Length: 283
Image (tube, rainbow, N blue to C red; front, side):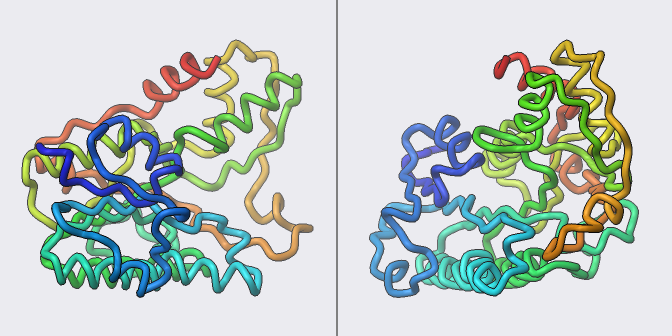
């Protein structure tokens, strides 16, 4: 595949950085070079010689989206900007790869399938769902729904490793269930779909492996980083956020069916294996 004709948006984020490593000849942009929330900026951009737009940009501050300013920012990036991008993708016949989230669902269906009706609980989830509907109007798109993304920069694994280094035994929620999605796995999925010319459409895109709670994952992090002496105490989501105003509601079940992705010939990696490698690389 000719990565000279790939354009990466959100290039400085966790996924954007991983995509740049995969596609070193791709064009890329972040907010300082292209404001995707500004229609004029998008329409005046030079889209010549671009066949594939990889949109890794998103407003991901789930709790921040519940504030007055955050609500506006979330909708600008996750919905209005997507409208701008789908407009130029349609105009120039470009394929769009867009990253969505399990937060477009309320967490009641087990597992979540690609054709499940949208049912977001939070402002963030609502804005992502709106972006999904826009992308699905295109003829040429891959809409990928991920969960619990881990890559470069600030994330849950690094936060827990930081607590371990300080010898802190944390209290972590045990009623949110899902799997980690490493940016390395997301890149593998994207490259597979593009390289094999898999059928366009919406795909759940996470690591495989056993379902786990955030508390279970924390215990695994401590085990793999040789901090087995630390104790992880369980709590519920309701208990954890009881005295914290402005917190977004979260889906408790993030089990995503990977059957559709696997039907394309893709073989998923176990999140525990990728976690082990991630910790080894960040030790």
